[in-house]
Amino acid sequence: MVEARLWPLTALGVIALLLAVWPLWWMVKRAGRSMGNRPQLPVGGGRYVLALVTSIIAFAVGFATLSLLVMLQSWQAFTKKTHVAEIQAIELAPHKLRVYLVPIEADGARGSTEIYDVDGNQWQVGGDVLRFRPIVTALGVDTVFRLTRVEGRWDAAADANSHKGTAYDRAPPSATWSSLYRGTDHAPLKWLIAGAHGQYVSQLPDRRAVFDVYVTPNGYVLDKRTL
Image (tube, rainbow, N blue to C red; front, side):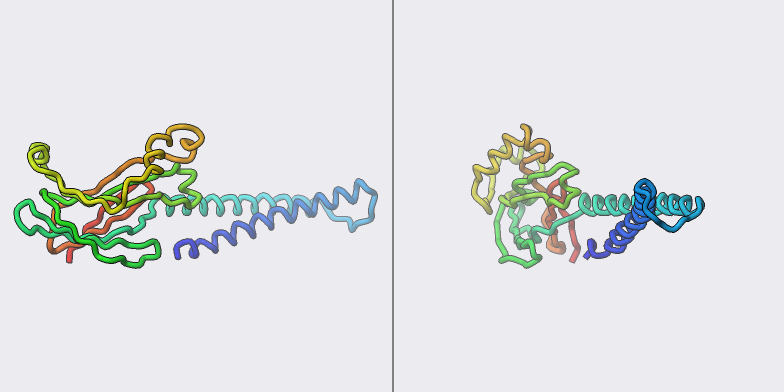
């Protein structure tokens, strides 16, 4: 939808560049005819000046328009948010939380609701993230991710150390992701990939809120909506 709104800029830039080339091609053709002693209609010097000025102006318009188009596309790529899950979390008892997770497919379809009971003050979700260099992101390549785990989180480290952790795998460990964790800092992968790592977001339970998990070029983010 957003990309479709940029087509007038694309059309303007292409037309301007074509108009810039046409006067230059006309002058080159006339120069070729003169060198070959072929007949052609004589024109005054003002005609050449007008053609040159027209070409310069059209080149400037085309370059400015296409530069603006590239900046807008880059901005869209760097601010893009992909909705990957919707979460509701309630407190059943002190330090006992129930998490309802609805995965969001790439086409926007909602998956089946998953239910997890975790211990802690907060709930936490996350997984694997593969981030690309800005030049790759600007070309439209999206961040690759796996939402692999749901678990409980304690506010204080002392509480976390004194309680047994509760965690659930949504996806099994992957040898491919382990290789990416270890190898993205070596050429040629490091020229394209900004980083491969685990990343998590957490929040307090709230019966009157829905939490939307997104993936951006920098990884997971979490937005809260009050019901």
